Image (cartoon, rainbow, N blue to C red; front, side, top):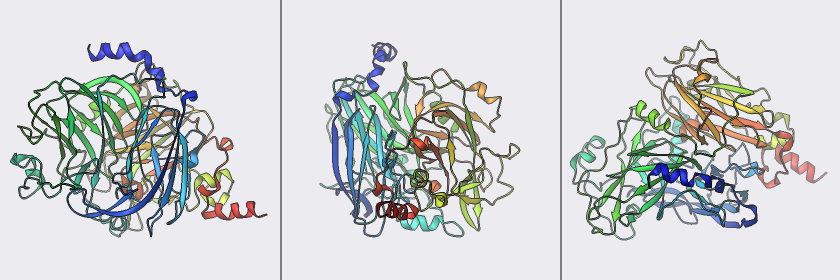
Length: 583
């Protein structure tokens, strides 16, 4: 059966996306977060582990389940929070896990309980959202299957889960210090790309093919030799011939945009950010930080051979070798390496190729269409600037500094001094030259937020521009907490109000929670403000958020339910709660 016919036959089952409340269960976990020595890429360093594992434990649940996770912070000198990336937190904004936005960070020695409902199946992950702890290894997978008694509209014989990340040998605390230095000390490119927390820095799985690593190293890397228990030994994917496998991909990278390919095999992309899409076939997948995908792979190649799985860097000049592992046909010798070099990662700055991939993604038949008109609109100019010699990122000339009192507590309890009540600008001067470095290199810090009426349609236009250096505009993957949004379109150059709206896809735009903003271009999003709470919207590149590239949305403020006191025991809310509870 062809992919198209297969989809048409099963598309009527899209309704299985929703949970059946009657079959809901409870997933309850107890976690301890602590530092640990490990060797993710064969070089020892410190990672943030959960219950002694890195990456953290994979969470499995069914749509409709309640997930309860008790997180104890055993980091002796650092706070911690965990964000459940892709979970919309309907009715539980205090469990979103964004420090300073939805909760106070968990102090060393303390425990905080996250409790939320997962409402639909999909591929997600979780990660630290305090400082740059995601880059220190605080992440893991979160897989939501169909509600009990229901089936997803996908057919396959087996499943693999691949969590992709990048890894530095420099400590995260050192990186953070460098980003705030005058002048800034940039973190540089990662030493390694990891697949499920495993990579190889000082050796190569493909050393027999001299050109496989030559562009990334001044010397040829030796062949990797592993002994039992090595933490950097790759996890092979063992498959049977003539079967179809679902590969779940999630990118928790701190910096790198990635490209995933399996030698000799086509991939059918069927899910993006926990939402079904119209299937399409490709030889490789571009995946940006914060994105997730599911692809179907059919093992229809020579069963006597093994094949490379390659994850290379895109969007940045590659100084990090691709991560490699092997698709092992069980009919081939396990120790037999693939007979030819790994797939070559597409050219790093072929942005047209990247855009073409993004433009192939359409919602699945039966998915909800977007409202045809918006009521509120923001046009956010993304710039790199300076504040008293510090390099910062800004939106509409405001670089975000999250306050000590979580926004959720300030709006819930009407604490006027919690943050600046004047919102940031809703747009920017349309004569701004996006193609050249900013004429005014200075910007300001701020912590104001955008407050939306409840249940209205809001558009956000992300506008990219040149950075401080000439001919420098980067890809920025933007992630919205608390919502999925429709991606209405991408464009080149400066967004033209009243003109570019005519190019929007209002028929079948994909629902996402993370989307790329391409160099010197714009991306248009639409969402409905139907989830009472305060929600982060930010670049998912770790150092960029650290340098101020984010904004905060608030909606339905008079509809926010009772917030657990333990979520808000810091800043101004701490004294407020003490006074309320001890009149």
